[in-house]
Image 1 (tube, rainbow, N blue to C red):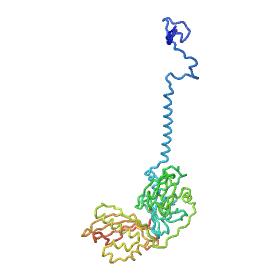
Image 2: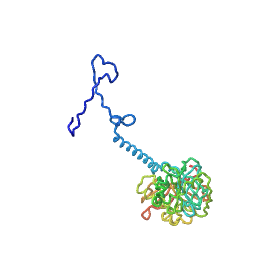
Image 3: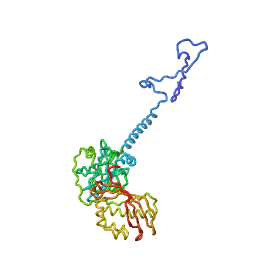
Image 4: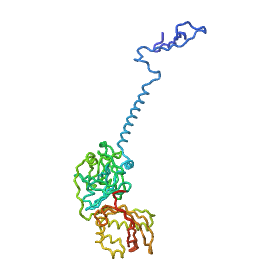
Length: 409
């Protein structure tokens, strides 16, 4: 008998003939073989069904299961976050070609806005930019200028224009529905300096403050989703008092079904937008070219403001003596100049005088002298400038080329 407190020694495994494992035939002539018989577990230790592999351990499997579940949830979150996010460069590339610049001569001189071109030559913009218009031009992203007429407006400040000319420009599309309230949105429009930009607006749940995002030229700009589809339009008299006209409100006008109120046409000496213009330099930016650009920019600013008395300050003493502000007002009663380009600058005579060639598009009333029913044209004018009062002044000008009309390219 084993001593108290000690278990008896383990029993050795029972040896059985090796051939008995396979069959009950007698052993072969080579002699007996033996093998070890594994000890059988008690029936109570065995679980239901097939026994698990010898090395299977649940404690190693559960962390793997949890990891897969977490990874799947994270992947779903990333997919959703990507669908709600917005890249402004991508949106600008998708929506920008259909966003246009709206310029107009109006009785109030407010005619600078953005707009969006829809199929059929329909342009949606803000009515505040084209109140009492004399003439309206649309500038597409590629710099082409087209004439436009007002079809009408609604009570919420949405104006509908019809663009003249060939229907060969990219157009926008309306979204089928509004995006998720937590999805990013953007505004694609123009700035006062003429640059096209895309600005993030935040979300419908947490919108950004427009006065900190865009300037006045963005009125009429489309609000778009992350795929560049139109979901709204910025309207209102100012950015501070603006609102977004929603998708359902825009859809009838984009499809030509909405009811419009005719816009009263201007009966005045209309002015163009009052923001400053800065000629582009197509020549080397030398000190002389910089002076030429500055004085010609001042001349165009006074022209657009219809400040014909102030225009005299850009003239030389000789030109001022033979000019008359009233005559200038008569010649440029409805003129508005934009897209100016200084194409050449050369020195002329002593005292570092200069000759310069300037091209620009001018918007005017179709009833103006020499307009011949057109609303705009491209001019190429050569200016002779002399140095007076420590700066260059315009001493004379002659038109080298005049391309009338902007109905087609």
